[in-house]
Length: 126
Image 1 (spheres, rainbow, N blue to C red):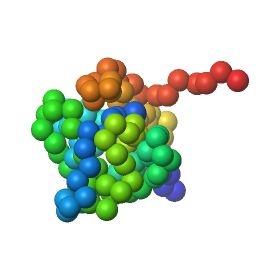
Image 2: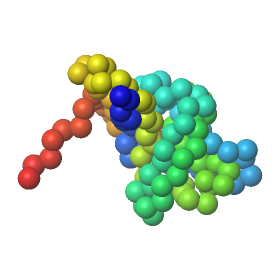
Image 3: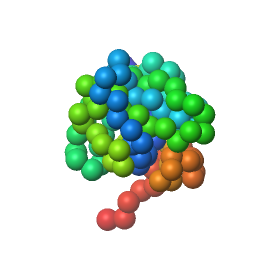
Image 4: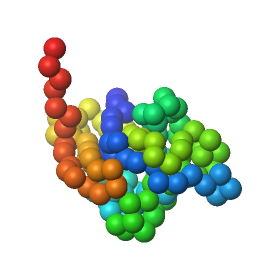
């Protein structure tokens, strides 16, 4: 049996621009992609914290250390510069891989510079 698991997450990245007339996708600073383990052209899910929009596109590389998060094409209607978003990628794992599995979690600051990384989300208090 295969289980769909969170592979990677960039949590609370700031949209720096939107490009309606671009071919499509989301341009992400190469340093963030690398830290998260998200590949160029990999499918990603984007969750907009500001307006609740959720959409699927693919990642493309923006210049390393540029801080760029650009939502492009039709998805540009779903975000605005300054919006906070969660970028997530998922993977299908077999049950044997689950025992040693952990996602790559990346937490940027307001300028999309990496503040910290983690391999799990802390438990929340009841």
